[in-house]
Length: 166
Image 1 (cartoon, rainbow, N blue to C red):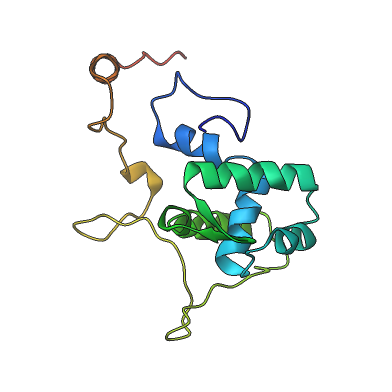
Image 2 (image 1 turned 30 degrees about the vertical axis):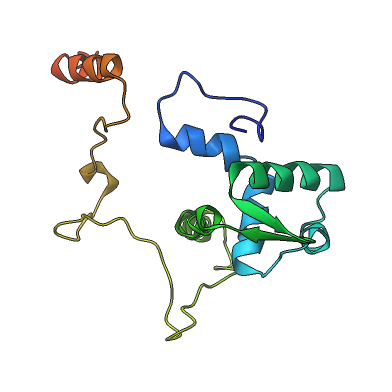
């Protein structure tokens, strides 16, 4: 299934972002997931009517989500699985970015916690101190899924940084 949504894979990329994009990186995909998460869309006709998406494109995306385990079919409904529901923080973060940089009249949608009514947002926080004031404070390091030869190349680059040119 990976690569099916965009018709492209990022096999040379050892990166969870690239792999996620292979499954949900197409614009209709994100909007379908958004509507399933936050608008209550479950039926083909719900998605088609609310998004105005071509039926062949919608069929391809929904079938791809089922194959990827993001949705499951229950009769005529497409229901998010745990894997699909876990995309909520990513969509909320993307919404916040859009609200800041692409919504000149203010946020068109507000997310509220149904239990207490407070705003829901997404923050990047340190697991220990709870603080990350600037993305420059976040360092990307090799994880357990990084192939050994890539780890060696990354270590060599860190120990031999490029010399700035004037």
